[in-house]
Amino acid sequence: MSDKKLAGLWIDGRKAIVVTNHDGQEVTEFAIVDTVKADVQHGNSNENAANNVEQTNKVKFFKEIEKLITNSTDLYVTGPGTSQEELRNHLLETPQYKNLNIKLGTDSQLSEDQVLEEVKNHFHA
Image (cartoon, rainbow, N blue to C red; front, side):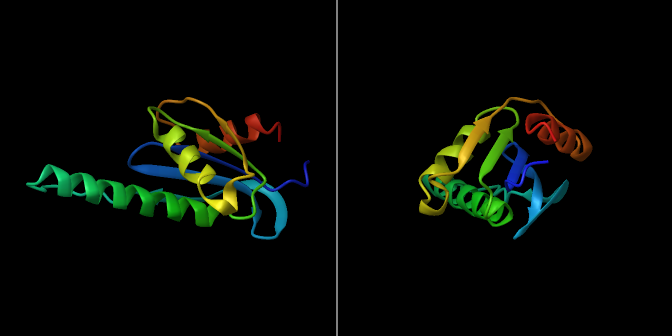
């Protein structure tokens, strides 16, 4: 078992399932920490306003994920579409995470248990 603080998550535009092997300071077994849900805004009549709200909500979503992966040295991000790249870019632009080792994968819809297994397999735990 590694003494590194590792984290992994499955993400799409609506939610992220976060798995880590640490609870803040202590390295333990891998476990599901939380499922973060994104705020989705509906019904804006102005396209520009809708885009601004969407960007604000995305940053808020990513900030919630950040709280769960604090102190991690390595991060594995998987999921469908482009959400993994968007999260990686957001983290690399954040001073606290600029040295975080981030690896990306691609997976379609996964259950919480499947995410846990995927992250454990990635880190050979």
